[in-house]
Each structure stands twice: as C-alpha cells, then as structure tokens.
Image 1 (cartoon, rainbow, N blue to C red):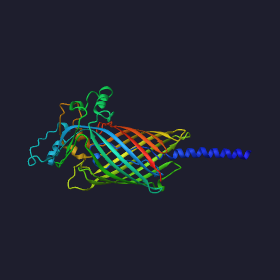
Image 2: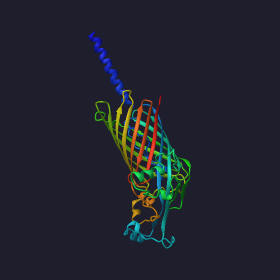
Image 3: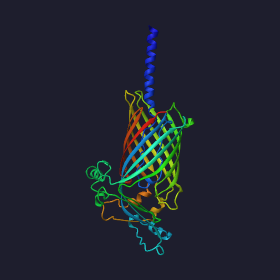
Length: 405
C-alpha cells in the first residue's frame, strides 16, 4: 500500500512538472509583432527588427502584422549651398535666422529639396519562420503599404481628429503643429529629392514595398541556461521592389535575452539588441529616389516584458519597447542648410519635414500578447515622444500560428 502511494505521488508530481514545462515551452523569449514605424522614408527600404527569441521555434510559424501610423509634416523647402565660403558664413548663424538668396546655379550654386507628408500609412506584413535545426532559423517577410486619409472606423486612434482631440483636451494644446490649419484627414504625400526626382502618393495607393530574408544563428557558446542568458546573431537581406527605390540592402544584428523566473512560474524577460543596415548596396535602376544621404541605418532596441501564466497553460505578456534609429541624412548639413516654410501661419514644427531627417528617430511601444499553444495574438501602440511625427502615433496587431509538421 505504501509503495502504491509513493508511486502515485511521484506520477502526480511528474504530471504537474510536465504540465508546467509544456506551458513554459510555448513562450520562446520575448513576444512582439513587427513594430517598425511607418516612417515615410523607411517604408521604401528594408529595416531590421530585433529578434528576442531564445531558440528557433519547434515548428514553422506563420504570422500576419497590421500597422496604422499617422505621419504629418507641413510643406518645407531646403537649400544646401555648394560654395564653401557661403557654408561657413551660414554656420555662424542659427538655422532660422540664416539668409540665403538663391538666384541660379551659376551665381549661387545649391542643392534643393522639398517635402510634405500628411497621411495615415497602413502596413500589411506577412512573415514565415522556418527552423532549420536547433541552432539555425530562416525568416521570410513580405511587406506592403496602403496610403489613406485615416478616417473612422478604419483608423480609430490614428486619424487626425482623434490626435487633435487628444492635443486639445489632454496634452499639447490646440493645433500645435498645424493639422487643423491644413485640414484634417487629408492626403498630401510628395517629396522632391536634391536630384529633382519626385515621389508622390495619393489616396488608396497600394504597393508591395519589398521582400526580406533573415537568418538567425543561436550559438551554444553564447548560451547559459543556468544563468538564463541567451544570444542570437542575425544576417539580413532586403530586396526593395517599389518603383521609387528598387534596390538591395544588407545588414547584421545581435540580440541578447535575460530570463528571470519566479516561483509561481511567472517570468520577467529583458532583451537588448543592436543592428546596422547598409541601404542601397545595389540599385536596380540608374537613379532611385534619394531617401536620405546616410548610407547606413544603425539601431538599438530594448524590451522589458512580464509574463503571467494561467491554469490552462496560456499566458498574458506585457512589455515596453524602446527603439532608436540613426539619422537619415548626414549631420554636417545642419551647419549650413536654409529652410523655408509657413512659419508665420502655424504654431510650430513647420521645419520638421527636413530637420527630423538629421536627428535620431526614437519611439516607445507598449505591447500586450495573449499566448496559447496554437495561437499568439499581440496588440500594441507606439508613441513618438520627441515629436518626430513619423509617425506621431501608431497602433498595430499581430497574429502568429504554428504550422504543424
């Protein structure tokens, strides 16, 4: 009788331990959908999303991501004098007091560009991840975009009316950047680069922007299960397919994850990663649109996630993500550029369309994920706290399902 009781107790403990292990096995590091910003330059080239998984998935996975971001920059023009003496003179004056009278290229040679961005950009991204073995994983991602005015109900939180209601009633003041002056829920998406090439998008324009291939390596040498510390290395290839920027990008990334487990099986994950991308390594046409004259985009990303498990082996995960990306244009040009816009007619920010191309872009993202063995659903919202307005506010949803072998 005693032997039977002991055996019964051991079996029960084994069952409980197995159930706990199974519940934890569906959680592979930090959960997050693709949360890249719908930046009006970034949508035309590949960008690197940090990978905060601790190992390749047990089976192939398919995921779909949808994002909606409100991008707004009033019309602004920029002159870039070519004469070294003129540049030196302008560098002695703060940017908004600079005087530069362009006559023609012979008397006052200068490069010229202008930009105006006013749209809600929708991203539709399909991802497929294939585990090769216990150390290698292949990811394939197809991204596409839709340009809209952002009206209800399809852009509930990212339309102009909601954002300006928030500014007027909660934070920011009435029409701080001129949205109401230019008209709410409008489309105005046009950019002329310094080579004279023009990019223009209209209401309901839809395009497939590119295909991205990623290979992730999870080396045993960098794993420490006892310390719950994991790393992965990524190599990335982006094929851009839009008519404005047909080109090829390459990049590398590295990510680390620290897992902290509590006695009640809940867990806390800390992720940090960095990457660098070489844009337009190969151009497939003679002169694509110049989407910034800085050929490299470097990023740093961190993520803090808390996960609580249910009795049915499912979980709820809450995370905060901070992402910062290097500038699109070379910083030295801020010493001498001349900006022109309707500064007398709106409260502020008329210069952002050009000025923000010379600043690092950062954002905070708050993510909720509900996970179970056959499904992971993520919801997020992204806020730009430095007034990049690219986008000002973004929301999204991600759905991931495993594909059984």
